[in-house]
Amino acid sequence: MAFQPGQSGNPSGRPKASARVRDAAREHTEAAISVLVSIMSGEDTSAAARVAAASAILDRGYGKPTQPIDGDGEGGAIPTGLTITFLRPTDD
Image 1 (cartoon, rainbow, N blue to C red):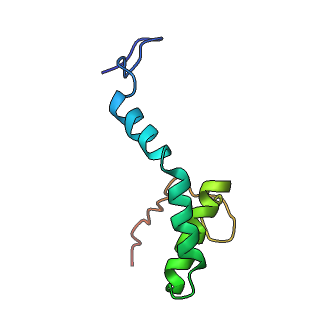
Image 2: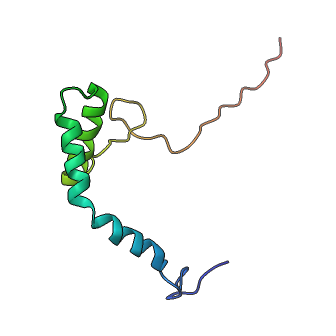
């Protein structure tokens, strides 16, 4: 179904429930950060849990680091098409 210019694909907008959930979660931000800090700082906590908590704190404070995307692992171009070479049979 094609939309006409100026016509929204979602005329009702974002569901109200998602805004309520977001707002409820934001009310617990300080408590959640405190829990993450205690996990990160806990000497009896596993190293994996400490790293996960530290990453979560940094991601929320500074955003997730950008992930470069390339085609060959060396920063080269991403291939956009497939080249097929047809070989003709020879008369042997």
